[in-house]
Length: 282
View 1: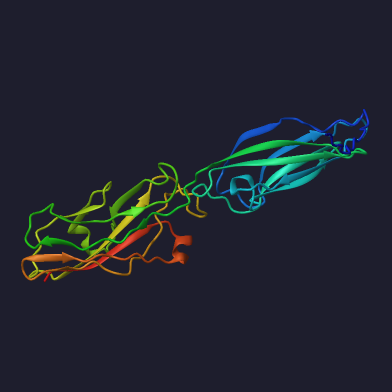
View 2 (view 1 turned 30 degrees about the horizontal axis):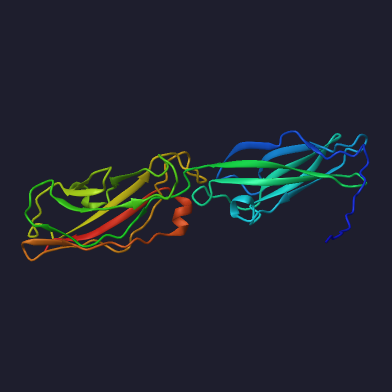
């Protein structure tokens, strides 16, 4: 038994060679995650492979995953410079290190011969984390402390999370806000590393029935956000729900707090503060 099949063979001009890249693989190329849309990441080029016909056409090939440009995170812009045609890879959508840390792009180039031949190159892009996230306070469960307990008694512990991907961008340090309006600053202290809050005095509800306390979370590197003047992200984050210390002469109870912040303030000022207010002694 036998079978036959027709095979079509194209005869290619001997002078027509496929395009030749300067490099088959470009990178790794490092770029900051806050590169502006439209910013150029890298320029690449290939020769046509045809004498006296230098024309080439570049295409950025979409892949099957986000890391291979499925969602057109990058785009290609072709430009001519003297007798050379370049391909500029530019940012098409905002980048985010916390979501995707690296990309592998495929660029295809074709020449302008009678039979267009093509070749491909790979561009490996690595993102660099910048300090663009703000530490945000998390909700706490109920805590209690006895009235009349000695100085350095633990009241509660606050916690803030910074979603930046690397240290020290995501390192959080805690402070009691040093402000005249922060009534509780002279009555409480905080462990800057753990967020634990301790008493600085022995409380007596007969002397004062309520205190206001404001706590601040600050990350550990100069901010990459605009207009922050190199300061760490310490954006205002107003906590509208309060902590209450209540008791029936013997026990002071601390209720949890809920975070709520203003996006307008976040864009403008760099301090993330928790207002722990109306600490009542009953």
